[in-house]
Length: 304
Image (cartoon, rainbow, N blue to C red; front, side):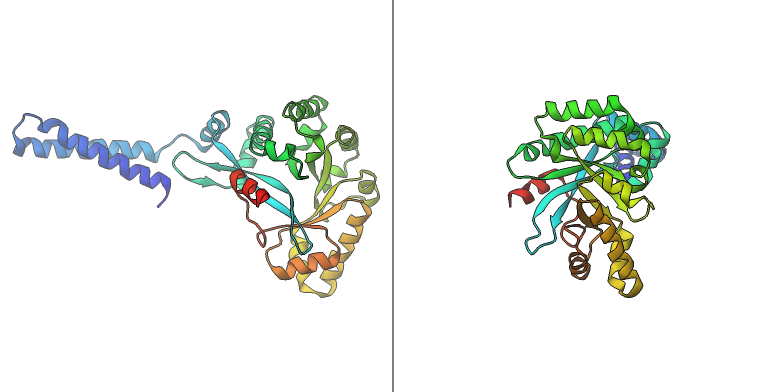
């Protein structure tokens, strides 16, 4: 039963009981019982109808941003050696409405972009990540968390400076943050100054969705990215053998030319994990090791 349906039933029952009870105080039971029942039904139907027509999803989402109604989940990134050591995490935005309905990022992120809420949403994400993981990112153990920024956000010098100032104010070394840019955007030469600027400020750079953008590997290698994430479609196909496995091996070779550590994402089985390691990947991310988890669980994982 959805959260919205539960709320409707609860409102109906309460309204019905109030309608039954109100007219019975100090009155003749038989006549007013029917009258109370009628009032209860009317009140219940009206209240349920009001719940049936909540404010639009867009308005709910706007309020969630303004009032702290969003949360973060963190999917660990691990080494592909025998220890599977956690070296960082990818933050993933989550939204559950006030009536308990979980809305997929595939639905609310495009909506946020269409509504022009991208900048404030990015700001909230940074605030939540620094608040959730601040102590861990300042600790002696080296971990790194990725931040996925929209190209227009990343290309804006003022916003880059604001991000750097926010991280510095939190006392977090900038190299504990990896700015994630997908391959298509990274291949845009207009983004080059922004990437170099953030590297000079001490931040790491992560190239996401490597293998689908058709970017110039020589150009990408000149950026000296710290992390290169191989697209999950190629990771899944790597277990099929034959020409497909050869294609994945070539992508790994191209990724290695970029001089960063290769992250295989979307790993969901031990077989794919072994293949990723055999292909030369350094790190892995996927349900095989860890599902996205709340900050508290991630911090406990680090301590354990």
